[in-house]
Image 1 (tube, rainbow, N blue to C red):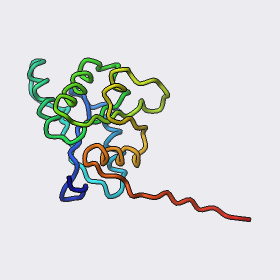
Image 2 (image 1 turned 60 degrees about the vertical axis):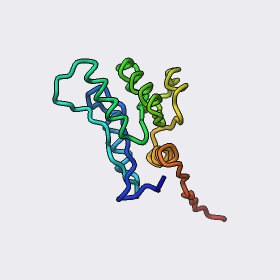
Image 3 (image 1 turned 180 degrees about the vertical axis):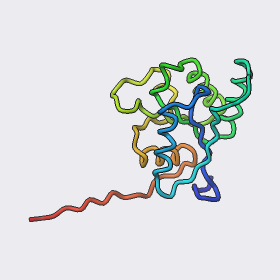
Image 4 (image 1 turned 90 degrees about the vertical axis):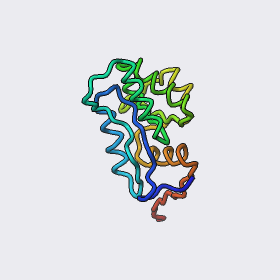
Length: 153
């Protein structure tokens, strides 16, 4: 796989239940805040078509199928358990890496299914999210270094 660039953005699917919520928006705020990271959003929660449940599942399969990595915000899980389970299982069935984002702003144990099927679990930190996406989607390790300035007296 080639590295992430403007000409070769990583294709990201963010789990949704055909609605945009705070966690969904927040993922993109974090991705947009990351420097020199290019991605293409493969998720389309705002479908303006009236599909039955099977049609919606087919649409999710298509969205997940073109992605390189699937992000599951754990905070959405309880409210949309059936849809989240379907998306995680679909990703695994299509051999897509699953990146689970911990619940935002609260410390809570991850649902057992998410923890078991996650290829990686990360907190809400733009650098950690981007590094995990690159690792899972492109097998690309970060070459960043933390620089800490300190004074000796």
